Image 1 (cartoon, rainbow, N blue to C red):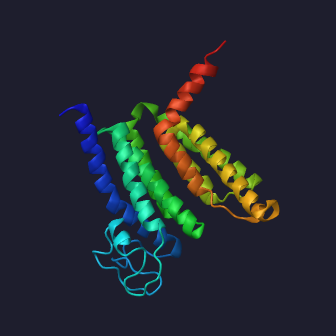
Image 2 (image 1 turned 180 degrees about the vertical axis):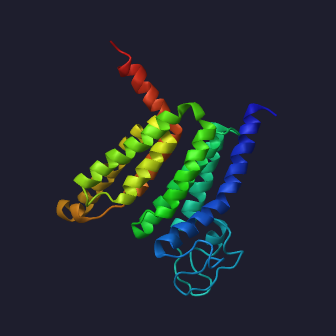
Image 3 (image 1 turned 30 degrees about the horizontal axis):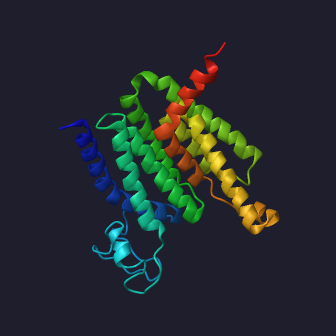
Length: 261
């Protein structure tokens, strides 16, 4: 099998694997912030009428399209976020397959993508970054990083600590804009990304600033400043940037500036 064919097979397999996982991540993001267990009740239900969603209607992306975004039982609108996050999960899994291939380095990339998808969805919905997700991701990340990057343990350990401390200082200085969930998420991202956490967080703050300025432009400066924006989605976008391009940015910076003189 040629290299291109193998890459295509990896990407397709991970895309198909990511679709049902994205559906499960939707359940986790919905239930955990509401104090519910992700596995109970076992089948998803309509938030409006509480009717269980049948297996055919629960197919990732396809079910939502067939229902035209409405509950079959009561006709209530089903949020576009469900199919969007299912597709995003599958697409990111496939992209990780293209970048890392069938290699141990694929495991931490998939774990971080999974974490970012869940926390972004949860923060958009309830303004909560679930501690359970971060704790599991942290434990799994330590094992995955030790297997994939055993020689770089000091780098990813220090990156996690530094990211946590820096974000904590930001949260203390600007409590209205940051929460402890964002602080803990920064630490988890630092663990997975290593030194690529720096461009990742810069990208997150850049995106947050652009969106914040856009809100002020639309609603006015006074109203815009009072509009609370969840920051975890911006951090998640920054994390995705870090997975695919963060290391290249760091190396470019070192080659361009740090090695001069």
